[in-house]
Image (cartoon, rainbow, N blue to C red):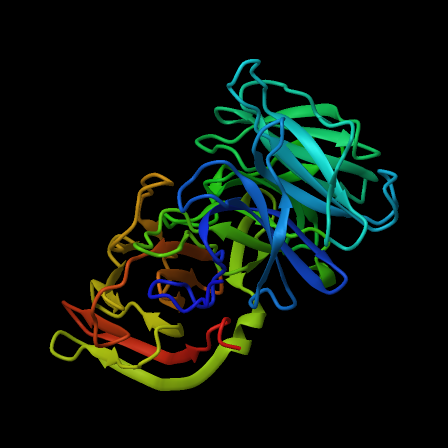
Length: 450
């Protein structure tokens, strides 16, 4: 059993005890417990045959890995999907049954089996699962159709499934009993593939809107009347970094919260018993309204439970001859500060040796982390607001950096392979002074140490 203390083990991000993981699946909250399922190859630290791993938490931070929920069968590997709580017994398995929707990934062996969508259920709160005897619930449609995301639409009183088809195409289906599904419409997300998510949020004017997203963080905001989704925005991206992929939101979350977690694809973990990690859970909200609506993300408030020693600096002026550095023995940090543009060309940070740059002339943020694999594809520099000041929050784990600007208006996820360093963070500038205000650095406790 892993002690979760290995050299490159993330200390406040989820990783499996051993072997490969990728997409988060079946995110659902039930009876005070957050359930996290995930793509898991139990046989090797590389991608391969897929099981659904299972972990639970009371606070979205401290996870306990359980026995696997879904195992490969004659219909194929267990690919990505979602989960719901059937409060009204629509499917007939019992009130408050936990239902998992997954892709059986077929096989190319003779006779070949196509990708189909299937159902499993639990009547003991997610301790054990039974695959539905009459699977598949959605037969093959085209290509490697996959990744069913099921959500309840309260307004139309029906269940809705978002499904990936092929290329940049997705579709919506609906059902009253979670077993029989009918096609509603096809949807195109330009430059975006697989792992759909579909969920409602209230905008700044109090209007209900729906977000349709894909694996590479591309999304549309629009209206949904129970039969058709109509986009009101152009395609945007909620994460500008290279290492955010296959994000999903929890269903049945309490207090109206919308919580999302991603696979931080592309990190390297040499000589470790595990491979890959997930992001910090973030809470989603909408900024703006109508065609200007956009998705914002900020770390869940529970993260403050991990705060330890705090280092504060009210104001610091940085210039060519006077960089600003902070030393700490902690590898786990929650850093925040405010920066004003002044007359300098930019602010340049070294975060545990990783280079992060704010370019005021170009209004961009870039990071060039060491030790990653390009799995999500190249992304342009992150555009930052053209404002007189900027609020910055940076989460640093053993092998990852996550940046949130202006309380989550902009975010970016980066993996890195740590090297030698003395200062946890250094700040440099040139061609003029840079003012840093309200600097706070919290050392964080490991979620595995308690």
